[in-house]
Length: 143
Image (tube, rainbow, N blue to C red):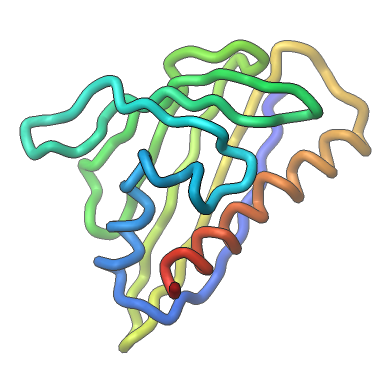
């Protein structure tokens, strides 16, 4: 079963700054508390990371997954899809950037399908933790 979540946040920065931080994958371990390590596996002709391997803490254990990034809808939207993972069957997500004056609204959407089903209370706790990444992104952008 696929579980999904979404959230939005207003950031005091232009969309270009938001996108700069969101695509600096090697720095994620510095600000995203559950991300322990990232490795860029592939880049496109413009030097942007198109495939990134992650090691993160999830559900009380370490997990590994690889995401492929899609830049085709920039500067409005950055999306990703899982290519490989250990406890997830699939991950799809996106950041949508809507600039308004000197600030930007970021809409975050995520769908995850785990290999094994989890009890509802564990899923809700995991969802809150995943969506808190948006607040961590805001703090990093505004710092």
